[in-house]
Image 1: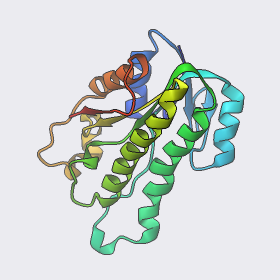
Image 2 (image 1 turned 120 degrees about the vertical axis):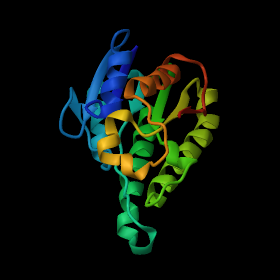
Image 3 (image 1 turned 60 degrees about the vertical axis):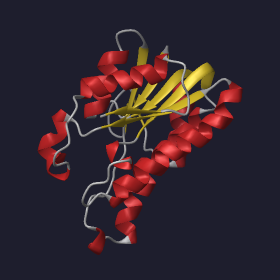
Length: 200
């Protein structure tokens, strides 16, 4: 398959690239590096991405910023960070990708465990991740008759990210990025659609 991997330089993205890259042709995309560059917060940038890469068999997104902070002092502007970047960024990518997939093609997005297991200072993350999963369930109903699939991978906090995010996840059993990458492989190479693959 020819797979567009957005967020390839991140912790999850690198693991996904290692897992999928042994069997498939990868086009690595990032905001500042990779084979091609894209800013998922910009419509024109996403359209330019697909104009450059053309038709692909699968699109995988492992990227997105969120706001972590106490609800008591959170501002709408801070909450909007997650909405514009992780939520709308991945939705924007999916909306464009559907028109550049081969028959049987797929889209895989990334949410996270806090969609179902809230944490302190994580209201923005819970809202954004839950919305991504809802979008995929709804979009799957319309993509399936067209022979296309969409899924979401929801990882736990990563072992590799504990130094940065471990304090937010007391008592959570971290997973490796390599283990998480297998769920992306299931999404890309499998047959299911409208699913959330939990890696908890």
